[in-house]
Length: 327
Image 1: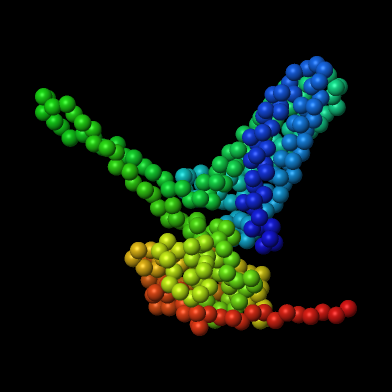
Image 2 (image 1 turned 90 degrees about the horizontal axis):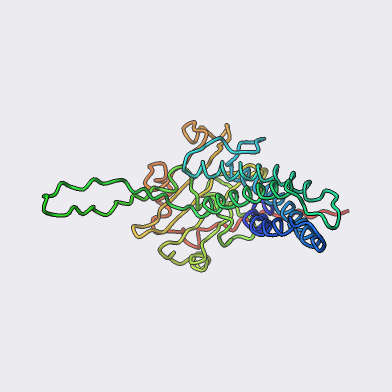
């Protein structure tokens, strides 16, 4: 499941490429007459590759969203959110993916109908194919914005101050207010699979509630992290975790920990979108938590990470024992 979930950014490139290339082949295959068969063969091939790529992207995206707790259990789409924040982007990304799957099925059927060698693909194949390509590109564009956490720039209208009649009014430049892209979700930390993995396999960390963790670091911080040196400014380190089960990594997801080195010092984040009922007592009964920055709940974390990462000698090396089986 981890392998499929982590491959979603890679698999999503194929259907987006088909969304860019397929319209050219569809338009070229609309001219009836001799020699048209190669063009609708190209259109059929591209649509088949796009369908397979879209299926892989949908399955990996669903696995990734469930793995990170972004979609409730037994649901195919996240909660409806049509706003401009990360939740709205996630919902639109998933919605366009489902629309692309439905229109793609119709386009594949229309393009693969029996045709004579001199016939074009037809208006039905052209219409469904263009709708499919539009849905693919919209899903890809929302996915790109979601992964890269673009800031929302708001330029409020500023009325010019009253000036004497003899002086020409000069409007002041608009004030640009940068919205916080991670006000509701730790967007970059959720994309931890794109960082460089530090642990090849989970290690048990008593300092993090006895959970099994894996560390992921930005490229500029990976070497310093492994050597136990001070992290450079701008470094991002994320710990993904799973709960312990009988002394081995379990299947229940634990919290996501993140540390970012700012000019003012380390900034910590703890995100757990779905806390098991039996563990909510330690979190004041909350079903989900998102603590970051100067949140008082992170005081004990800041005491260990006042200078950044913990000392190299304090890191856990407790790995799960391998189970040998004989037949």
